[in-house]
Figure 1 (cartoon, rainbow, N blue to C red):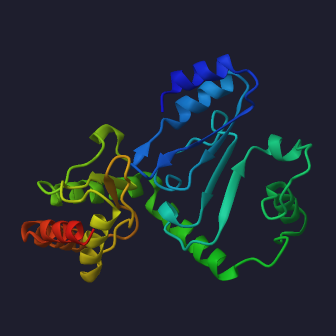
Figure 2 (cartoon, rainbow, N blue to C red; figure 1 turned 90 degrees about the vertical axis):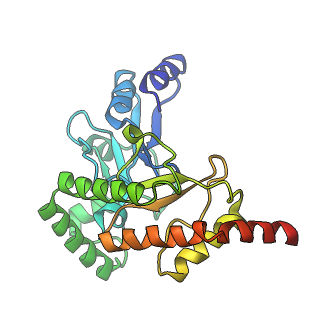
Length: 261
């Protein structure tokens, strides 16, 4: 996203009070310029809400004075914990000065915060095993460091791109690629979800799993780079791709699909 374009839109629409956007957009693997967009909004008195689900823990996000007003993330993804806990980092000003009654009990972040402040307890029964696992994941993240984790993911991404070179090419130029996942253009033999399903089943048969959906607008698919990915797994991924495409399997299955249609 273009920060200047967003700033111009906000100037032309003074009725806008809040701006919400995704930091790391995993459909294509792109990273949006968070701090530049937040600054455009701040100059115009617009509050910012950031979806940091796929970036928090791997990309540096300044949450001090010039950071976003609200950031939402969860215990999995780059924190490398189990899914099950979502959390919000918000300015105390917003929490303390809230005047509107919430329209949701489950998503009433302010009431949850007040309960923890008053009693040290959750409003309702928490998933204690998920909280304990997330606590350990955060401890490991602190020990590794966000920059080191980002570099580890970038190395995985670059090795995946190199391993699949000559068979598929990245959708984005290197300067826009996130370290979280990388999107590849589907080969000419894969034109729809049914065609990609054949490749997905081939990879699954080798105990290899990528994102299961083909993005039809860009005819691309995604490979995740986060977690404890071993270099041997990347080699196996490349081997599985080579056996699929170089054996003519993709072409024969595409033709068969066309005959059945």
